[in-house]
Image (cartoon, rainbow, N blue to C red):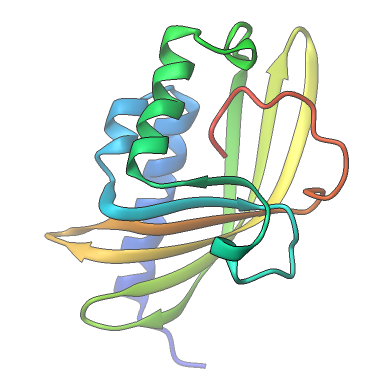
Length: 160
């Protein structure tokens, strides 16, 4: 196994930055991390790869991401009424493919949410498709594979 440590460090920094924005409700800056054609996906089936033809918990293009953020910022939905605090822990970052125009990476995420005094944990594998942009990246696709996506999920008031 050969590793490009400089690329891995840049990818890890980007993933950590995105997680930090979401934990601190920097939603507008988070929106700026995306390409216009980017997709945010939370599949209902961990084994599914044809996201466009199957049921998903989320399948957001640019317009849907903006609407999701607007609901979180403006309290326009039931799930946003009592937005809790979150802490994301990202680990095991691995670059799967790297080219001049595209980098595909995967990591483990544990998202902890505290709302109404209750702590809930959401473990997931997250796959990123990144487009190099200057010294950083833009999100082309983010797929959050929740370990319990097919089980009970209470009202989610955040972006994974």
